Image (cartoon, rainbow, N blue to C red; front, side):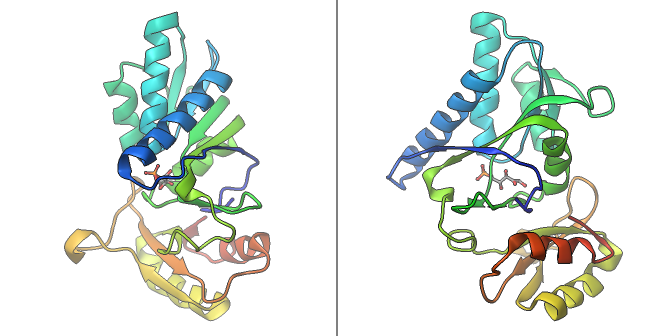
Length: 230
Ligand code: 5RP
């Protein structure tokens, strides 16, 4: 799993065949409910991912708090996750106070048949990876549209890579020289400037030209480029 997170996880997918927004949301809600009901227990420290699917998981945790007195500490992976936790009246923890996480739940942009996974569509991947890699159990929740045979089939924007602002240009060039394809600096809406992550960094979306045979090998090559957080 790359931005591509490197930790094992279980994928919980709802097989809803309709691609209508309503059906998509039902799929997200069903996957979120399955993850929360089956894997979150009282007194646990729970990692909360980012994006639209995780909203359903946080809402379900909040329901269980009200209905059955579930008590958990939630560790956010982004500003959005932090807001969600607070808006839903849940207990907000932090990695320095609660470095050992029992279970982490997050969404994904695309998941292939071998459970390689693209994350970072919302530019939160670094904190998501830190939380996921410190969790005993990690569950990815997704509606059926996220599942594909090969990465790049449904998520066309490329592999998100967080980069230190001063290094973005050399990193772009190195990625293209080493791995081919195109490394695009992610721009904000209306191209007002680069997207800035919660960590104050930029994001490069690397679009591969031909499908890599071995994602682990690609991952190893990418992590060795100075200036990026991967
Ligand atoms: C944010 C992420 C999200 O988990 C991913 O983009 C999925 O989002 P959504 O649930 O809205 O489809 O990696 O960086």
